[in-house]
Length: 202
Ligand SMILES: Cc1cc2nc3c(=O)[nH]c(=O)nc-3n(C[C@H](O)[C@H](O)[C@H](O)COP(=O)(O)O)c2cc1C
Image (cartoon, rainbow, N blue to C red; front, top):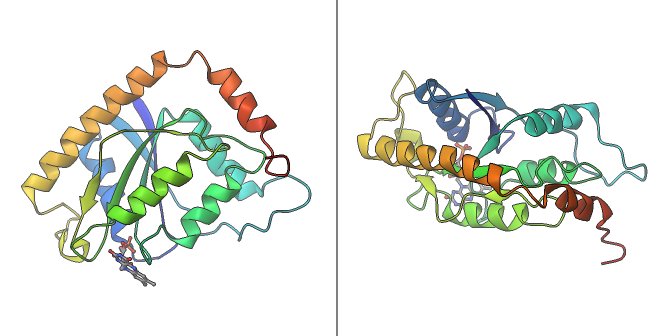
């Protein structure tokens, strides 16, 4: 069984992105084991002089290292990803490199019509930074618009077309993970490049 992390891209207690990941965990249970991971208790990144991350960050990093892929579901705040998600990614690229070559699928939910498309583009750009360097599934976007109305009381997505699209993208993601396993010849050197990269010398 494929083991995945579903990273909730917000510290909000009421999040339709969390609902979406919970829906995916249940809906795809026969294809993958998705562990929902929260970012809401992480401290604010303050670039500590000693390059050592807090235990709560290390725990998330270990989970990502052990997983075959990560689904990140992001809200959109002011046309960007939430500060809490950037905060998490800052920690996860500070002397630790769990995202290097890790397959990532991006989803997003938003109250409005555009369904987090700008936040998803922003997230792609961040994940391509030298110390993150994730393998982001190309040409794929799952945008859940009008997310406050999208779920029924059992947390099922109401719209069958949206379910169908998500099923297709998830199937593609599992294949993408498989393909990425073959594109692993530079993995050790990619990790070293991330480790040796320094913004002071950039
Ligand atoms: C400060 C602030 C800024 C927001 N900016 C956007 C935005 O740029 N685009 C958008 O679609 N929704 C925006 N929203 C609305 C929702 O937060 C957004 O739709 C979000 O994706 C919902 O995700 P959630 O249910 O997981 O919290 C904003 C909300 C707040 C509080």
